Length: 125
Image (cartoon, rainbow, N blue to C red; front, side, top):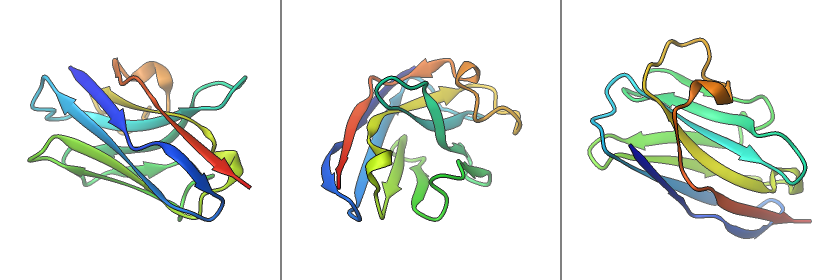
């Protein structure tokens, strides 16, 4: 499985960005696809996750109502639409894949077997 994240950049506070994750190497049935982020000097933290069929979606409280995770099964793409960005959203964003979605541990870094290379999002105040 390979994951390729893209779409990061520099944006002013209040602005929007859409991150993309191109996934390959599997049909991704029963996978959970997640977005995580890591700010300088901080631990990697959960942002959002979506079960591959799309019926189960989860968000961190800090991004709920501002970020939307979605996927395109036909294109094997996962997206993270980010709105009303804040300086504290500045981080490297990673997409990740968990082959065995259970519905319980989607926010745990250790649950994910595959990781993309990360894309930097910088929000200026």
